[in-house]
Structures are given as C-alpha cells and as structure tokens.
Length: 167
Ligand SMILES: Cc1cc2nc3c(=O)[nH]c(=O)nc-3n(C[C@H](O)[C@H](O)[C@H](O)COP(=O)(O)O)c2cc1C
Image: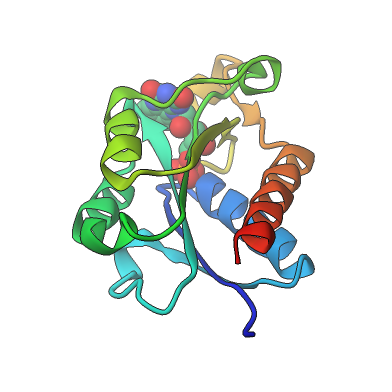
C-alpha cells in the first residue's frame, strides 16, 4: 500500500489562492498523504495521482483562467479520479457565514468532472496586492485577508478522511 498521492493545483494571480493551496498541502501531509502543490499551468500529467484538488481565484465572476485550462486539459483523466474544486474570492466574511455556491463556470466543471465537492474560501486583497484596482479597493477600505486557516485545514482533513475510507 502506498501513501495516497494528492495533487493540489491552483490558479492564482496575486498569491492568495496559492497560500490556500499550500495550507491544504500541509494539512494533507499531516494526515499522511503525499501532497504536491503546483500552479495549474504547470500541470502536464495527472496520472499517478490518486486524487486532485483544483482551485482558482474568482475575478469578475470567473474562475482563474489557468484553473479552467487545467480542468479542460485533463478532463478525460480527471473524470476518473476523485476531484475536489475550490474557489478563493470574497474579500469579506461572507464565506464564513454561509456556503457560497460556485460561480457558473465552476459549477459546470463540477458536473463535467464529476467533482465530489466545491468550497468557497474567503480571499485576500491587501496593500501588497499589485494593481490599480486592488490599490483603490484597499484604499477605500474594501481589502483584507479573509482566508481562515482553520477552515482550510478542516476541509483538507475532511478530504483525507474520505480518501482513507475509499482506498
Ligand atoms: C478586480 C478584482 C475583481 C474581483 N472579482 C471577484 C469576484 O467576482 N468574486 C469574488 O468572490 N472575488 C472577487 N475578487 C476578489 C479576489 O478573488 C480575491 O482577492 C482572491 O483571493 C485573489 O486571489 P489571488 O491572490 O490568488 O489572485 C476580485 C478582486 C479584484 C482585484
């Protein structure tokens, strides 16, 4: 019996989603999985993994382009693997208060890939985030880091538990 190999791929423009992916990786490793974390555009082969977690930042209602491309590129294989999707978005506490449904494009990928679950995590937009829109939002008090490490860890443990019972 080998350890469960989990790929965590992310589409991130400014690093918030990457941070979430890395936390998921840490938590899965602490549960005994072999977790590999990489940007979605670097994924060229998903064979060899027992499960895949694919996440992306949401910009203007759309999942990060590299998350979408990764889903498309590997759809044939992903359909036969346990897959979980996540989004990083709201820069407020709404993701803490209720389950936020995937945006339409992500809901479609859920279906096409037969993904097990989707979760929306709070995102981050801080003074360090580059870009004019980001700076202006932060200046108007619309920024903050709403990633909740506890919730990210919980989701990873929940996935590890499902993988343990299914293997
Ligand atoms: C121009 C812009 C548009 C955004 N649009 C959305 C959106 O439609 N829905 C959402 O939930 N979050 C939206 N956000 C928040 C980002 O998704 C959030 O900051 C995310 O955590 C960024 O991830 P990244 O650093 O990995 O790119 C937007 C942020 C910016 C700067």
